[in-house]
Amino acid sequence: MSYTVGTYLAERLAQIGLKHHFAVAGDYNLVLLDQLLMNKECEQVYCCNELNCGFSAEGYARANGAGAAVVTFSVGALSALNAIGGAYAENLPVILISAAPNSNDHGSGHILHHTIGTTDYSYQLQIAEKLTCAAVSITSAEDAPEKIDHAIRTALREKKPAYIEIACNVSAEPCAAPGPISAVVDAPASNKATLDAAVKAVADFIEKHEKPAILVGSRLRAAGAEEAAVKLADALGCVVATMAAAKSFFPEDHPSYVGTYWGSASTPGVNEIFNWTDSIIALAPIFNDYSTEGWTAWPQGPNVAVLDKNITKLHGYAFDNIHLKELLEALAEYFKNKPKKDSTLVQYKRVHTERTVETTGKGDDVLTRADIQQTLQSLVTPETTIVGETGDSWFNVMRTRLPRGARVELEMQWGHIGWSVPAAFGYAVGAPERRTILMVGDGSFQLTAQEVAQMIRRKLPVIIFLINNAGYTIEVEIHDGPYNNIKNWDYAGIISAFNAEDGKGKGLRAKTAGELADAVKVALENKEGPTLIECVIPRDDCTSELISWGRHVATANGRPPAK
Ligand code: DPX
Ligand code: MG
Image (tube, rainbow, N blue to C red; front, side, top):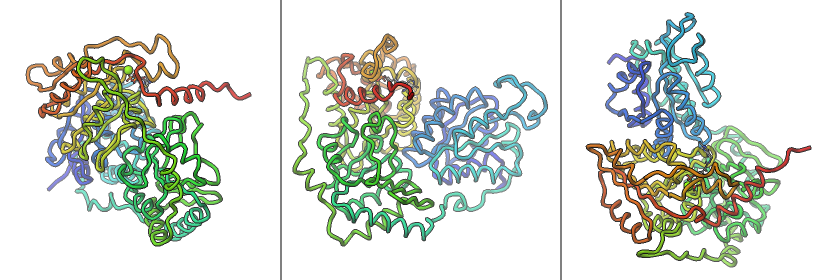
């Protein structure tokens, strides 16, 4: 079989497990799209715009380990690069593939359409270099294989996005056949001596403390160490909490699991036990202003060991070039038959109180946030994935208890409102066997609403809870002003516009508890498209966690300049 640059790329995408790639057409990439279409193992899925295309691939990577987006030069790629920044922040290997000017035009002095109107076309590559772990420009077929392999290999190893730009006249050029995929996907093992030293240092750290606790961070999945973390928890027997962005990265039915650690927004009892503990083993955490609640809940200092994806740091030590998974497995083995280090769990059982169940309405009672959150709770099964948008959705999702197997997807490091609609689309394409539930605010929805049309096109039964609280409530609680008010939309009505003549999406509005219950029944029966339930609640009907967390973050944002 003979290959072209485009079919080589398609085969590599299929070989790394992509059954789909996302695309928006443009004249620079049409030949490339033709080449990609020839590969029947990796279907082309279309998006409404390139920002959404990037986020769809990002959501797909969450379901499937990696994703790819194919866009046209500049007008397309510069929009997609925002989502690529998101993939970098969220540790997801998304391959952005952009078509580029004809190889003869580089350095020719020609001015081309879709460009900024100068004759140097390297600007897009230069921007991409800042936002990816590997960025390559392909202007000849000879060096295409090594450049494609380098970009994909680096993305998979680092769990970061990569960028491949292909001159539009090169994608159909003949090129070498792909070699064994193991050259791309096989990762080198940890440095053995460093791993042994790290195991000893962390084991000493745990042994010399009486009251250790494990804190699970959001890079744990990227590190491939979720199961290894469970083994360590089993071996130690101490409490385990997840950071907010790591919700669902540790089984919530595990006997050691206590909930979310997030300062004042923690699950009841968790902040208290983390104040009581004398040592924290933090697994792949991201400590930023949001996750530390405005730097007020930031575990650091000699009693905190930070075990990250490839680097471990604890008082007096730094070890790099080791895999977290191997480190955790070795530690679990070491502690397996030793007396349990379970004092934090014993103490937690003494002091914690369950969260009181909130009152919910029925029938004609005016709909409340609590009704929505408990409805979400009632829908969660082991096959459910909840995609939670930035806003009070975060805190509602955080309150939801997960049976084993249920997953949550959040974008807390990048925090681009509107991310969740295309990401839920991409996720549902990548995991059709799961029930995808999206919880999104009205303000966020207005950024990327049109991607619901792609859910309709592909008949994906995503359930969308759209919280219409008349504005940017999280911003209202942080710092209010007229800029937090938005134009109301007929959100439920939008679905019939997207359906046009053939779609099977459903849009329903709930203003009472009874209407929400009825809408959910409709949603569960609709298997041929998404169901959007517009949930109308008052502007200030938000979680108490949002209010306290928002105040801390506002204080951190408002610090005066240092003198
Ligand atoms: C902004 C945010 O309606 O949710 O629950 O009402 O807050 P809530 P909504 O979706 O509103 C979201 C809004 C405006 N953030 O409260 S979180 C600033 C922002 C951002 N991303 C982008 N632009 C602005 N996070 C792309
Ligand atoms: Mg809102």
